[in-house]
Image (cartoon, rainbow, N blue to C red; front, side, top):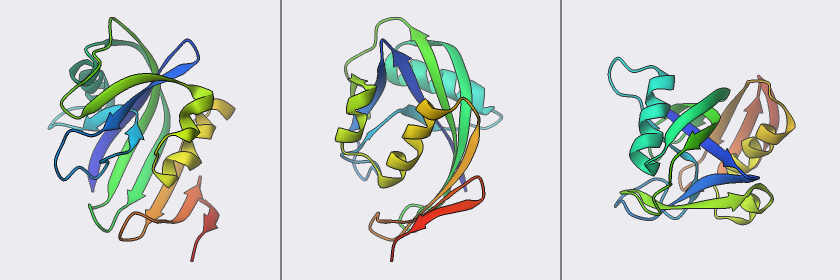
Length: 159
């Protein structure tokens, strides 16, 4: 199982989002997501998210909080466990990085973007509570969300 981090950087009622449109064979191609990436050898999730924010945005993460642990069941790409953060950063954001275009999006407009269906399940939780949660997102081949489990309780399943 791959280990990754994901951060939604907050500023003035917006999240910094990346439209993944640069890399070939990107499982996130065309989707809007937060910033983050894979843990390197001997790296903690906190070290990873600080590094990834710097590499992808040019900004320095100054505050961050673990908000959730996401378990993605992805038959097309391999399973992944993601440490989900919200945070604040200083500095000027670059408009583009090697993986996509970065843009501040008002929180109330996030659901209008091309998102993974599972992201639509966990993003509202970032606004509802400061508690840390665990969410398992089960996808079918092709990217359809088949099931969602929040803190051990099924939220729904599509057939």
